[in-house]
Length: 370
Ligand SMILES: Nc1ncnc2c1ncn2[C@@H]1O[C@H](COP(=O)(O)OP(=O)(O)O)[C@@H](O)[C@H]1O
Ligand SMILES: [Mg+2]
Image (cartoon, rainbow, N blue to C red; front, side, top):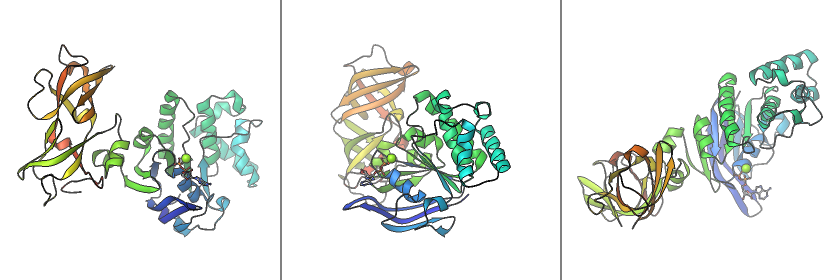
């Protein structure tokens, strides 16, 4: 297994630069998820690691070795794609063995590796079937098995679960996580799905328009998003981002905006910020609570009216509109006042420790320890 290191990596197609200076070190044995919206450059980064695309600029090492110019087949890396393209006329066993056969491995070695991989992936009972006799999830496991029999230095996954339905996707997430633990292999996993990123990753690298926005553990990106893009991308329903200005006294700072007044923790701001500074205020839907449904005209928090109530079993999503615009709150059903319905005035409050602040100009996180 091996560490993968990118330094100042750029990729241009003609005039267009689609990867714009990526620095990323993936540790030996780490599960790194590269996540970002469609078209941000994820596949391009993965294909450069695999050797399927050349770098326009920058450095790339695998296990400490400069691999620029090394062809894909000599990089000892396995790639699993969204479309897994099994050989339809070959059985599962033949599909698993194929890569080793063309590399002229001895028959006993091939049989041993296929048996081992089939056992890890729970494919042992399916070895004599053809791909068309398998479910989508089983086919996906065969595709992973084909990569595993080679015992590569690292695995690259490009949206491997995108073609599966929701139930199977969550089942495969668990499988992949278990697989990573058992193999201890370096894995770089590309997805546009923040839930996949949060659940699978040791560390997440969030890419937007070819630029890394933040690299860290899932909880780092969730608890301390580096900018408004990360704040809005990670978490569902998405973080509310509203306009405001810095107000209050130095010892009792607050954010004021149309329809909102939000106290901040003393000491949570860097020194020297001027009152009146324009900010983006970030609050996660689950960090909001209903203060009072009847007396909505006074007190701090967010004052608005309920537009839509979405029941989801034990929790309820409230779509509230105020002078600040739309706001989503996620509360427990039992906390709803009665009567309460579309048009009801509502005041929502947030724990000051749960407030995120971003510079309105740059979008960067504002915090005393940022
Ligand atoms: N061979 C290519 N020629 C020109 N543009 C490309 C090529 N491959 C990808 N792109 C462009 O690069 C950008 C990033 O693509 P890609 O890495 O596939 O994004 P992602 O995998 O994050 O959806 C897109 O705008 C895409 O259109
Ligand atoms: Mg892609």
